[in-house]
Structures are given as C-alpha cells and as structure tokens.
Image (cartoon, rainbow, N blue to C red; front, side, top):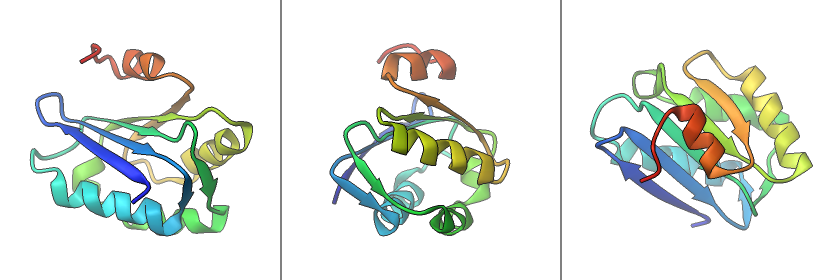
Length: 123
C-alpha cells in the first residue's frame, strides 16, 4: 500500500499521505478505504499529501476517480492537496477543474498553509 490514511472524527478531517509511485488503482484504493473507514457522516475537511510521491495518472483517469466518490460523504467538504513538484501541481490543477462541485479543492505546498485554509488548528 503506498498511502497512509488518518481519520480525525472529532474534527471530521481525513488525511491521506501518499508515497512512492501513485497510480489510478492506488487512488481508487485510498478512496475505497475512506468510504470504509469514515463512520461519522459527511467529511468536513480533507488533506491529500502528494509531496514526495510520483503520480502516474493521466487526465483520462480522473473521471474514474470522480465517479467513485460517494456524494453524501464528500458534499460540501473542503479538500487541500499538498504538492511539491510542477508535474503534480499541473495534474492537481487539471483535476480541480474537472471534478464535480461536490467539494472545494485548493493546492498547497505545506500542511500548515492547508490547515490555515481549512480553518483548522494544528493537532
């Protein structure tokens, strides 16, 4: 598994940290894990940390990921993407424009900036 999932039910926060090569099956596996492990209702906040990971996905793969999301779980959530390379930043920008309006996305290079945008204190 090339991701680590942390769930903070009190803050309704989901954090996914990716490492190594991350492909479409890995993204779908992480999403499936979120669906299985989140038991507190709709997610309010999320952080996907791709810093140090290498995304091996294509724009054509994004609809699969978007379609796999449970709207009741993600609707209205604010989601921060942590990215530290130009290629992954470009992919993140394309994804944020393609996704359905279930929740808002922003791209950051630090967790601190992401938490500030999410309006969450450091845990």
